[in-house]
Length: 150
Image (cartoon, rainbow, N blue to C red; front, top):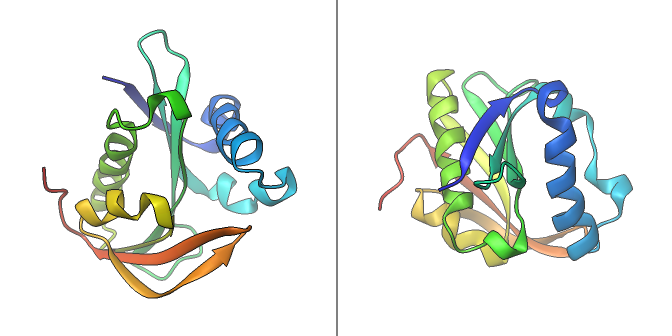
């Protein structure tokens, strides 16, 4: 079972960067210039660590500059050897709990199409057509606050 830590970009950047570089830049071929944005500084981040405290996953909750009661989830990544172990779901559940505690009532995200089922299991629904984002098919999804089903 991974250990989760939430915090600011200043607190978690060194470990979150490792995961995002490995998954998005190295594995998926996204240009590094496309990976970093101002949302990092204004988001709540979660990082998952394995039993040896190596980072294996990360995601962020963007709530600054969003309409009242709304937030976005983004940059969800799990290192390849740890996919299918529930790490993504645990991080998503953590961000949903954090959003609820902040009074967020509506969430949205851009899901990579191959990961869409993870978000659907937690109550997200697809909105609109599949679109290209950094050369990868994505689906806009949204959620009115609900809990994940097992």
